[in-house]
Amino acid sequence: MVLRIQKVSDGQLVILRLSGRVRSDDVDQLKEQIEGNSNRVLLDLAEVKLVDRDVVLFLADCEAKGVQLSQCPPYIREWIDRERATQGSP
Figure 1 (cartoon, rainbow, N blue to C red):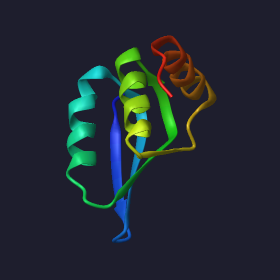
Figure 2 (cartoon, helix red, strand yellow):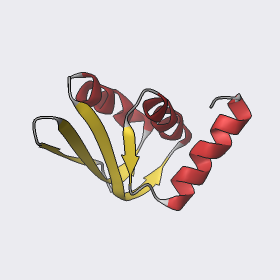
Figure 3 (spheres, helix red, strand yellow):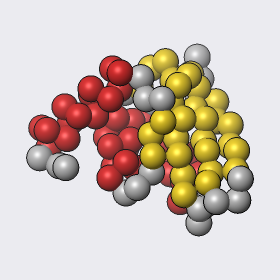
């Protein structure tokens, strides 16, 4: 299972729909997709099946920088919250 990214934009908001498995190897590609946009970015995680710790840390950092996480699977949300608590981040 590999990562698939579908990009949708309405001119003001860029939605990156992720599906499959997101690994630490994919973080650089996601950073490029996010940083390459001057519009607001939303990550739709509804179809994400598996992530690793580096991805969870990346998602927490994205959210702290204003990237919205949509349809985040409960296990990923709980993991992000645990990592924040461990690191003392908001």
